[in-house]
Image (cartoon, rainbow, N blue to C red; front, side, top):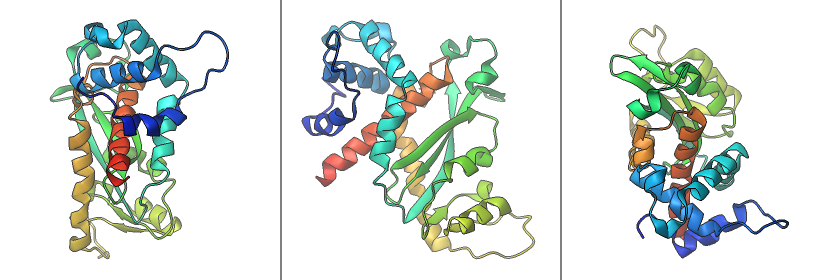
Length: 253
């Protein structure tokens, strides 16, 4: 069926899944993962999962249980450990919250912010030289772009170049890059009084992080936020990122 893992992708991800040496054997991991990826890509409710993937409750419970155990984050970190650190690109993307995801009290705790367009969430991401995701995070939609820059760039490697738009033109971000042994190449704001070193030619490569957002938004569970809880929505973003890494590794092997 569409959106299923290929043999190469399954071979790559299988060793990263949790082991269960004792107790009742788990339901087929590959079938359950295919069901989770089907929901991710199609955007359909869990109840509409085709029978070929087994009971929808099995897929949903596995998705939530492994999210709580940090499995999705761990798999993404393991795949991203081999990223090309020559260039680091940071950016954000706004996602509209669907009415089915908005009906929850204290939605600010669930990374939902109200603006002119209604409730929105904002995906923050750092991508590598090839536009593959290194780290992702979530905030309410009205949060400033550089709100999580310090956290997301904390693992920046020496010798790398940071590409970002004017929203990240802040002295503390440039100082953070220098402290990490990197160089921040982002255009200055119009109100900056002192000139800075900036290369428009190198800056053109920043479109790769924007292409990353376009690619993960092909997954309808990412393009529109249907999930009430921020942790579940972020898990879908991580799963979309995992699929990109699996596809990239498959094409290079």
